[in-house]
Image (cartoon, each protein chain N blue to C red):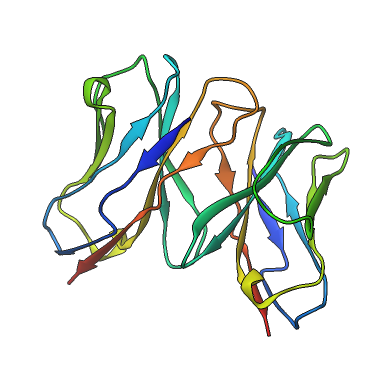
Length: 115
Length: 113
């Protein structure tokens, strides 16, 4: 069975601090995809990144970076120099490469950035 | 490209009534999934449709049903509403099935009184 664990339920940081959101997954598939989504107070989930299990290179996009470590089944997300607009719930998700299985989501981490 | 649209955005119903929610996918997307989000249960998968066929179903009672039309638009219906059905209902679409990125709509906030 597939499972995604986001152990941090809520995190609060002061603006400009760096923050890392943890994501640990379980799967028996050798090929799979990992995702991160952001859900601001408006409610819509916004897609941030999709990563193939064969691509272990870390990725950076502006203030966002992702650290994928297959050895520890983790796909952590770091926000550098956090801003108030980063306040949201962040979800990590897992998907097999094919078939009919739906996305498996973690329970989310609520990030509050205080000015 | 236009994003995923959901209508209505807000809805208030009373117990026992039924409700129909609509989702229009991004052009070219043939897969539509529905999720229920509540503070206590988080994001829960309801069902997924692809080419007018239900491909997956979550663990919800039969009061929750859905369908997909030939233009890929999807509707979900909840009959005999209960207070616990109050939630944010999110629709997500993708071109095909597993592995591809799902794009979410803004959601429909349903309040059952």
